[in-house]
Image (cartoon, rainbow, N blue to C red):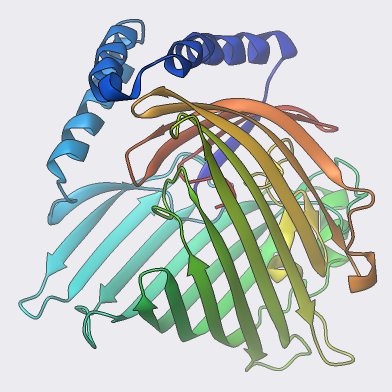
Amino acid sequence: MTSFHQRLPLRLASAVLLQLLSVAGATFAQEAGSREKDQTAQQEEKDDSLLKFLPERIRRRVERIKQADSTGAEAPHGFAPTFGDIKRGSGFAPGVAYGLSLPSGAVVILKGVYSINNYKLVQMAAQSPPLAARRVIVRARARWQDAPSVRLYGLGSDSPDVRSGYAETRTEVSGEAAWTPARFIRFLAGVGLEQFDTGLAHNTGAAGSLLLASMPGAGADPRYVHGQASAAIDLRDSPGYTRRGSLLSATFHEYHQTSDGPFSFQRVDAVAEQYIPVLKDKWVLFVNLHAATTSLASAHDVPFFLLPDLGGHDLRGFSDYRFRDRHSINSTAESRWFVLRYLDAAIFYDAGKVASTTSSLDFHGLQSSVGAGVRLHTRQLTLVRLDVAHSRDGLRLVIAFSPVGQ
């Protein structure tokens, strides 16, 4: 997921938000009274009439989405533009990908991405054709990414809004197998070799140096054999965009340090999501709950850059990596309604916390943010999210290219 955040003056943010939601409110009222037998034709007419009020650049983008959605066109082979997929906080990250389909049905994709914040990514990935009656897919990848300035705050939910930064380079070679015994059930298992190199970000002052030095795993640069296994029940229409269904998933991670040092640990991530359609899918209520917890042997520790964290994609009123600690919990309640065929508006409330012990992982003392925004999407994919969110740290504009929480 790629996103970026920016502090906004209250007047400017309010103006942006009102502009985004003004069309949404009027359209929602009209949609509530539409008759089902003429629903498709009426919506086509409304879409066309509302499009003329949008800027020309957005109109052209929506028209291209409509055309691709109706034809079912897939991403072209050969060279194609790509965006994001670097570490969060990279900012706008365009790149180039090259896809090659082999006679066996396997696919190989090479890509390189460079962001406005000087983040870099080079990756080669391969995927097998569907195996075992089209229920098994095997994937492998080699990946190198460089993040020269990652946001760093103190540990805990009460850490002050005082930011430093660190540099992180990650090299990975991994493989995984995904098994789908039924349409809504999936299992995944994988293993990889990962190397982390961290240090001070450029122009970090004395206070930032002290903060980094106080973090667990600072300067350790561990190498890991990283194994993972997950199971999920997924009743959503699509993981990229949906208006109904639910998701229950759990993932277990084993980080075994191969280099010297006390940084082997385990981590479990659990997710529950529910999408409730209202008024013939014109209005969707979305709620979720995410939890992450780590465990380790005595005298061991979790490196700070692999600790559970909150901010940006889940607590949208806070910057990326705003809170870190051994355990985390967060939830979102969002009301999303239909504006155009490929445009939704939403209001939301996020809440969460991090904790150093599992006994403190409860719903007391949560950090929260509220806001509203719009989503540009196809039937199965969220293309752009634009949210304005407010928290104790102030007002933020969030632009992301993935569903909420990803």
